[in-house]
Length: 80
Image (cartoon, rainbow, N blue to C red; front, side, top):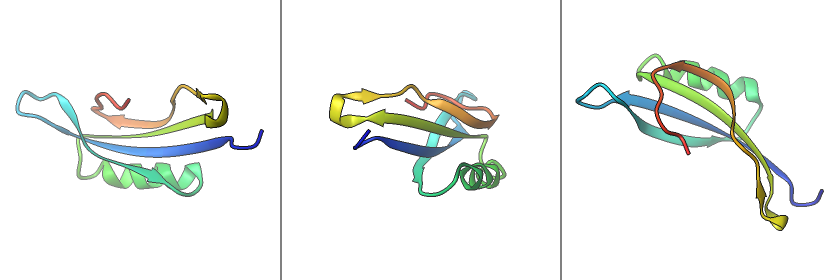
């Protein structure tokens, strides 16, 4: 369908003062899923957790799919 898209996002999480995971940063990854997972693994070396999420959608008809977790490690929090 024209206008369909797939987006891959990488999230890194740190811990707040009470030990709860909070989002440190998010970026949209332009490349293959394997590359996003590799970047998330690297981020996990300096953060409490990392996550890779894929979404598919058709904005022309108002559809955005649910997030699909491709990779998760460590402590993660809300990513929506």
